[in-house]
Image 1 (spheres, rainbow over the protein chains, first blue to last red):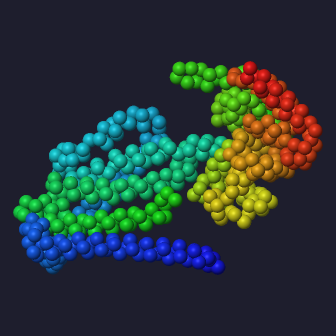
Image 2 (image 1 turned 60 degrees about the horizontal axis):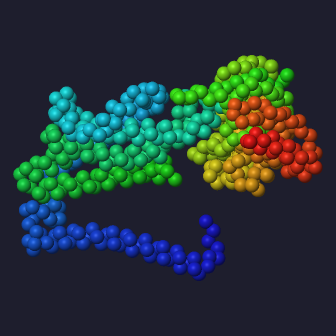
Image 3 (image 1 turned 135 degrees about the horizontal axis):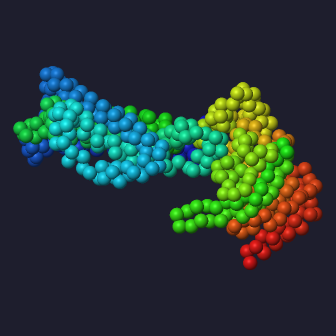
Length: 266
Length: 254
């Protein structure tokens, strides 16, 4: 970066860029503050009924109360654990399955229709079966989470593997590379950006999986709090759990976006 | 017979579900040691098929392909350079060049690495070894691709339209570079091109192929004066040869 003798127009251009960026950040915060402020105001003045809509102060009170009782961390941890476990298992297993399918063209063609069916099947429909097979509780929730993420992982990765440039494969073949070398030297690094997109998709999907699993069967967790809160009309509880979910999902997304900066599509 | 490539009565059929395409019909030619030969012919006639057969990526339906008089071709002596440079964007120039060595793990790897380093220095690419390919120009990328091929020390180079992705000006200068590298490293080369003037300016021998199923229509030995392909274009015989080959190819289409 050389900083010599830029023209006046360039300075103006840079200033305009900066001003624009500042404006965007300002309005982002403004939207959030306005949303919370109006919500609180309407609840206080009973334009909306806080019994059904809760309010920011009630959520904060609820959170403090739960934090003091220690239940906040227990529930959060339960859901986070299920989600991360489901996320990890689904990504690793889905990737391995994609590799196996890529390895043998015939195997891929045999399993293709089944994968398509599995992908279009709403996984929640398998809920009762999962509970019967692995039992109610954490195991069932993780399995639900894995089922939701794994098919899309496999499908995305197998597509990525097969769309690697044939010319590059031919180059490696002309160097007498074996299949494993082609995989390691070309397929893996070339499909890194696709793996990152899979991670991003799975961040969202794994939360869907674990919360759905908790709706089905659970004794703790944020999904449990939401269902329980809904049933006993404790909207403050529902909102608090949702709020924690927002933050966790964002943090996980942020972690993946750090990986993306390193390995994502340039 | 050293480093000599021979095609003897080679036939090739491509198989598809509904058809059997007769691609090569009784192909016979020889490329001598350190000779630069070119294959020209109408597009789709099977020029690339001949390279793939030579490299062992395809097996002939009939006939024999001999390298050093051996019918069991030692493909480790063959280097293949493609139309696109096929550099791996996630690897540095150096890592791209040593890709073949990484795969083949030859016993004399250390010596070959040294050779690769020398080649890079010799052809003005050493300053870029830690850069990613995307920061190189098209011509430089093609030279890196050539050195990647040469690093494996092949005796016979197969060049499949290696310049066709470049703009005309770059093409002429990369042509000169590649020619010089191949000649000074004393390699045998077989070039596929649809550009007649490129074939004339680079080759010692031109093999003219007919429409599919390809047969060898003519083998021309060339001896143009000039040190580089660009200089050779100034030779008086250039236009005559161009005309001759052009007519061969256009007659073909009627």
